[in-house]
Image 1 (cartoon, rainbow over the protein chains, first blue to last red):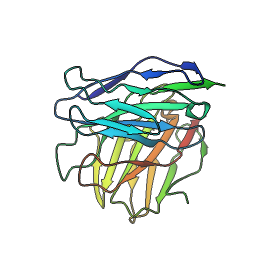
Image 2 (image 1 turned 90 degrees about the horizontal axis):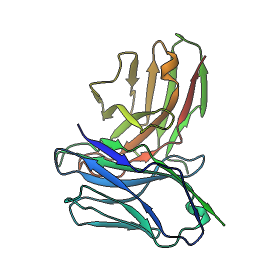
Image 3 (image 1 turned 45 degrees about the vertical axis):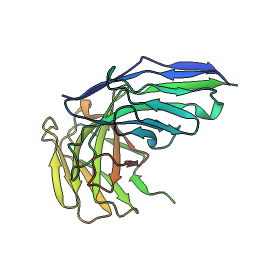
Length: 116
Length: 114
């Protein structure tokens, strides 16, 4: 079945440091890939997505590129802020084409803490 | 302007005592999902509704049921909670139909079983 593997956490960085959070996946079809973020006390919210190979998703200074050859979707940000402290989830939707529903398979999530 | 609302935020029940968790949405989305998230684990899809059509995941225990009386509301019923059912329960919605659209999540209900 489909699966998503995220690097082990937690991750603690100083403000303005470079961030990489690794994510690899296993899927039988051609999935769409997502990063969701959960700020303290809030629900998960979509950060960015990519729907086909070589697509780059970006939002709020975060980027991730869909790499089919390495089955990866690593999240990067050049300069993190204290406000980026949250839990980050990598996910895939092996949706089977138009008319299907977005059934997400999630990774375990990783907690990022950014120090001033 | 909360769009997916889950009540209550924290729920405590007793071993074997039925419990119902609630979710409502103001987005008029076709699809509603229930996920279970245990500590330090990935959220796991239990089931979802596309409109009135119910779709159960193959490995969801029979102890878990769901109802969707109208577009706005969806309920998760746990008939006889066990200690292993203590978890965060997440409700989510989406428009449906493309397979890669954004999901909107509520803040979750943290269930404790005593």
